[in-house]
Amino acid sequence: MYKKLLELSIILALIVVILGAYTRLADAGLGCPDWPGCYGQLTVPDAIDGTQLEGYDRPLESAKGWKEMIHRYAASSLGLVILLLWWQAFKNRTLHRQSMPLPTFAAFFVMLQGAFGMWTVTLLVHPGIVTIHLLGGFITTSVLFWLLLNQNRLSPVLSNISKTNKLLLLTTLIVLFIQIALGGWTSTNYAALSCGNQFPTCLDTWWPQTTLGQIFYWGPIGINYEYGVLDNATRAGIQMVHRIGALTTTMAIVFTILRFYQYRELRNHLKIIAVLLMMQIALGITNVLQSLPMTIAVLHNVVGLLLLLSVVSLMHKTFKR
Image (cartoon, rainbow, N blue to C red):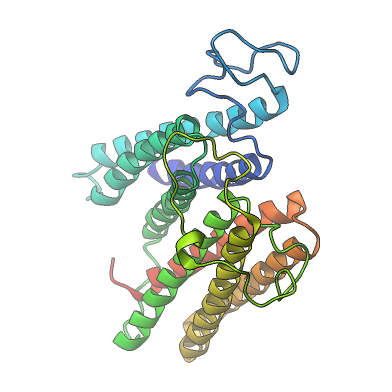
């Protein structure tokens, strides 16, 4: 039952990440101006679009409301499954010597994720809050994936990995996570199209007229950040920092692949990482050249998560657990 719940939770986590990306890219994050319901109901109200419902300043947009609510339904289901997962681990902690720290962390973390989901709405899609919420989804999925990998008793830890290579792998994971954060920051600041369809340049230059202080501007709480508040030059700077991060991450992953290719047991795994990396680069460039088509943009999020999980899986093979 524990393993089946883990498998179900990972499937739900992937669905939640996909729906979250779609909701964000469809500008539906405020499709329901309250939380956890939608205009005070458990479903989107059955009313004509544009209706000003009593007690709410935002007129109804049913399509956006349903995108947001379906995402919430999936996230709530994931939270329930993770709590059931913790309960199964707790019941079996003696009989099967089930470790409790990670299931407990997952249970508390998914509740924290729920809080950030609420703050995403109540704080009017503040870019920092939405980015943290995105990263939380990736962390939740990674923890669940690690727990599932722990269920494979036939997967030994490779003992011949040098400390230098382990440190390199850990550094690569951190670099990749930072790049995912930069991608979230780009999306939540509506900066994905700030360079037009130019690549690798941006607005006919290599660096727009902006500063790092403007690029990482946190912004006050209480104002509406829907569609962004930064000027286009600053958004273009965010886009360029994300591109620099992509180049840095690519170099880190390629170097890691080359260093780890000496271990025959890992070669097939490294090939999967290489394929996912190439896919992610192609999707990122296509997003720019094709002006952010929805399918490609959502896939860019999904492949980013799969790339992260592939590196997490590589760590699982090389670190004690």
